[in-house]
Image: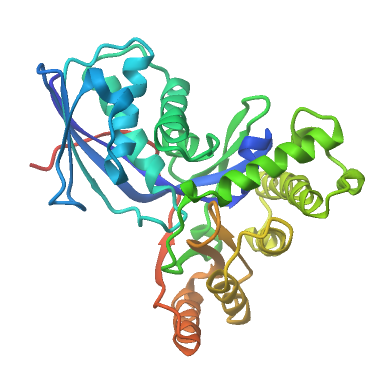
Length: 368
């Protein structure tokens, strides 16, 4: 094999934000929107990267100098994956990567991990490298942490690689446990509406890293290795710093919310029952973790007032998207209500679509 096309999806979390780097739990689904990587093996020692979304920007870099490459912006993500393969001792003699994507950028839907995972799985298959799914996840994480400089956990890459169609993916970041949880909203007459507030966020701008540092301070104050070890939210009252205390309270209660949602779904209960849990998660992200925005809050409040069973922001915060659990026959009216409210408040118009639990990273047929 010397060429092919691979795809990796974006994701939304049903519940479980900022828990991954705290050794906690999360429950994502993969989106139908993907990043595709058309890859061709080379032999000239160069990695050449193009993107359909950036047609005037073409990057060619000597693979042996990737560690010191001064490349910024979108290209740093695929270059970081190539660099991580090489750093781990895998030989990449040269490669041409052409990217195209339908995952909205900056919407909190993990477009960066979709890029990383599409490139990672393409390189693995193209060069027949002995790399497991766990390795793919870690390669993507390392590219984002060390090469791009965003201090994320492994949630996004795990979802992009491991998710299955028709299921949510239960992740335990302390034990490594993973389980596919059936998530068939259509059978219950429901849909999961994604509302992109059109306020792009940047995980590498410092806010995300500060929250991670505050969680580390909380764990240290409580004498534990990670906040996963704290099950009783009352224990967070022992933290003197009120800001750090709030951060810890979000993580402890968010872990409990993930377990609550997973239990309800596994029991086969009406998915409408998880709605209030989603809404409680938004309140926690807004008040305790303090990463929401006026646009996100407005979208959540308006969706609930228009009849959603639950709604919350998703992703790293400081912008991006919300999800709303709705009856299928009310999805359009709820989306319209949010759009009208945004217009009244002078916000940029939101973008909406329905999230359908989809498959993880894979090789796809070449349409050309």
